[in-house]
Structures are given as structure tokens and as C-alpha cells.
Length: 414
Ligand SMILES: Cc1cc2nc3c(=O)[nH]c(=O)nc-3n(C[C@H](O)[C@H](O)[C@H](O)COP(=O)(O)OP(=O)(O)OC[C@H]3O[C@@H](n4cnc5c(N)ncnc54)[C@H](O)[C@@H]3O)c2cc1C
Image (cartoon, rainbow, N blue to C red):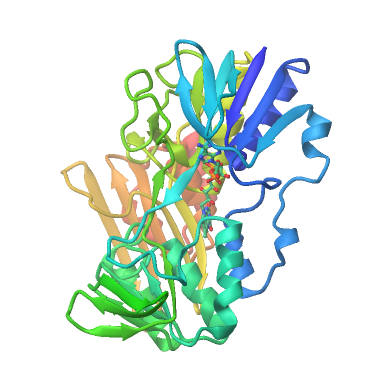
């Protein structure tokens, strides 16, 4: 059996391991345009803040490919997939590679900043280890860093710069940070915390254009003001990396649509990780939850199925655990944009103690939660959502941080 895996991130790596577990003899060829052992992408922000060295990011050891009998083809980018001829092509080469089973695990690319002048020097996105290494080269000269975007990546960038002794300005298009993960109450708690820590955060604002002489010097903002800057890190979200996809034969929406076996609508072609759109448990609809643990699990499920052992993916679920200075924060499932009579929302907010609990239910099941500074029950709430446990007691009881979940779980299993 000839297996081809495009992408050597966590999804591709877990898939290769799963294939080898089931099929000791098949030939596995793995393509990656980053010329490196698989590494922890979430930890690249720790390179920026100085708490980790580049060589500590690897998630597999030097002999990984050899030990598993994988043929790595790194530093090369797949430019086309031919579904009928069952082969892939690489950029700037006439060489083609055949497959019986193909996995697309190409992750996502950072969204470009929608402004003029982004080709100036010292303007970065933060998606790869190399991106951060390039930032580190210019960091010693930086005095006025600007961070664009208040999502997870923007936040991690700002935190890293603060830890390096710089005072970044953060520009957020929405009215509060982490707007994809939080509701307005929780977002404003995070905003207050960032401001209390000395971060200059401006909300409801974006960059129209950059100005400079080879390197960036100024940003012209949507409110007509001008912000001096000598380093810009943009965290404006990601989009699935699928430009090489043959449009007609493999269906994609925002990401590549997969079934519960992580297989696309082209037989024998699978997708996993940030590039794949799979069923979201909480939304009950196809969705991309671009997080590490889902990419790992999807890769493993895809690999098993590719090698002939049928395994069902249980569906994805958004979840984030963060510490933002004095705030411990967990978000799970659907926390925003709730409409319709089948949804019920319960909130407990203690401004003085800086605690916040929000639970979202669809019919009898919990589908989302935000916990700030009372996060101990995060694991059990995750389990209630994942297992779609019906809640038959008054739902507001679950807001109590002392609530006996153990009994609830035991009763629901009986
Ligand atoms: C700064 C940062 C912080 C993050 N923090 C968190 C966090 O705290 N928690 C969390 O759960 N998640 C976090 N994430 C998200 C997490 O890293 C991703 O969900 C995860 O890495 C996705 O894995 P993947 O294997 O699908 O894709 P990727 O890790 O993106 O790997 C895909 C690989 O495929 C390669 N590739 C792409 N196109 C081609 C092509 N045409 N040919 C060959 N190779 C190709 C890419 O170069 C890449 O190496 C963070 C991400 C970033 C960038």
C-alpha cells in the first residue's frame, strides 16, 4: 500500500504513527514545506517570550522517520492533487508521486493583513517557528511594537513582547479581545486585566496602511490617527491551507469536508487537522476547531481508517484553557451567537471577586461554558458536553461552584 501524507504537523504525524501501527509493511511518504522535525506550534509563542529554546520545540526525536520507516520529503510544497490519476505534484518540479491512500493535513495559513504597505520590513505573522526566529532577529532594536488582532495568537504575541520588557500596543477590530472564544462580559474582564497590566489596548480599530522606508515606521489607523511602530505582529486569524485542492472532486467549504472517518468525498482521500471541517459536537454542524488536541485526534483517526481499521471520530469541540495574568480562564463549545428558543443561558458574575460562570444549554444538554477564576469544574463540564449528558435537574444548579457533579454523572450513567 502506498500512503502519501501532505503536512508534517501534529495531524500528519499522528496519522503516520497510526498507519504504521496497523500496517507494518505499507510505504509512507510524508511531504512538508517546513524543513524540520514536527514541533509544537502552540509553543512558538514561548520562543518569543524567551522561555523556550528552538531546539526544545520538537515533539518527536531525531530518529523518528527512520524508526517508523517513513520517507520524509521536506522543504517541498505540494502544488496539485490529481484525484483520477491518484498522484500528487510538487512545486517547481516535474516529479509526481503516486498514492493509494492520501491524507491532506496541511493545517492553516495566517490571514494576511488587509492594509496597504504590508510588504515593508518588520511586519510579521506568527504561524511557524521561522516566523518567530525572524522576529527575534529584530526584537533588540524594537521600541514600539504593534500587535494586530485580539485573538489567541495576537494575545500570545502581546504577552511575549511584554515579557521581553517591551510595551506593545494592541489593536483589536472587535470591541474586546478573544471575541471568538468569549462573550462580551468575559471579554471585557480580559480587556480590563490587560489594561491593568500596562498594555495599551485600542478596540474597534484597524490599520488602513503602513508607511516606512524599507522597514515599517507608522501605521495609519481607521480612526484617522497615526501610530508609530517599528515591529508589527499580526494575528488576524487563519484560513485552511488548501490552495492546491482540485475544486470539483474534493468538496470544501471553509475547510475540506470530511465524514466521521475523516474521509473526504473522494474515496481514499482523507483530511485532518486545521484544514478539515468536521462535525462539531456542540454546534451539531460542520465546523473547524483549529486546536492542537483535535488535530492530533483527527490525524490518528484518519491514519487508522487509511490503513484499514475502521474507527469513528466522535466529533470536534472548541476548548481553550488560558491564564491571562490574574485571570484563569476556560471556554468550551458554543458561547456566543446563540439564537432560538431551544437555547438557555445561565450566568453568575461577581465583579468584586473577578469570577464569571456562563453555561449554555441546547434543550437538556450543556453545549457551552465560560469559567473565569473558578475553573476547577472545567473537565467535568467538558465531559458533560462531549457525552451529551441530559440534565434533568434545574440547570442553574450547575452554576454553583460547589455543585456535586460526581453525583450528577453517576445518576446519568445509572
Ligand atoms: C502561535 C500559535 C499559538 C497556538 N496556541 C494554541 C493553543 O494554546 N492551544 C491549541 O490547542 N492550539 C493552539 N494553536 C493551534 C495549533 O497549533 C493548531 O491547531 C495545530 O498546530 C494544527 O495542526 P495541523 O497538523 O493541522 O497543522 P499545522 O501544524 O499547521 O501543520 C501543517 C503542516 O503542513 C505544511 N504544509 C502546508 N501546506 C503544504 C503543502 N502544500 N505542501 C507541503 N506541506 C504543506 C505546513 O507548512 C505545516 O508544517 C496555536 C497556533 C499558533 C500559530
